[in-house]
Amino acid sequence: MRIKRGMGKHRCFGSATVGPKGQIVIPVNARKELGIDTGTTLLFFTGPEKRMLVLLPADVMEEMLSMMSEGLAHFEKIVKEHKLKAAKAEKGDESR
Image 1: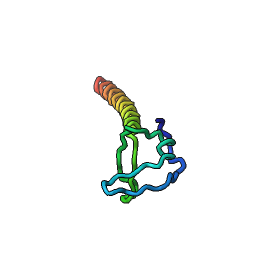
Image 2: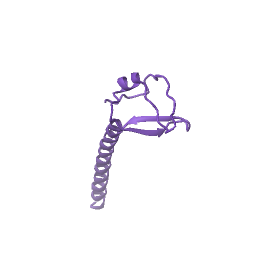
Image 3: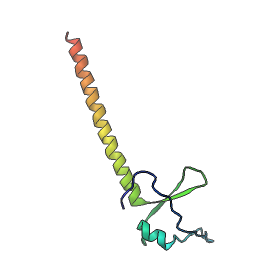
């Protein structure tokens, strides 16, 4: 499942009623469009508004975390390079 950048269009897939055991049925058109199959693990989050529930497939979260980790590793490399250059420049100043 690919992560799309930006907000995109919001869609309403229908409604579901919470049953006595706290279960809901995800509408079939939502499952088909979003690639949610039997056995798909969904993570539940609160949305920007506290009364909002966001469901996210675990594989999408893993992909997002992987992208963030790559970005952090790149940033860490830039910071290390900057510190190394600063240390070399400081060392050069001391030798004068």
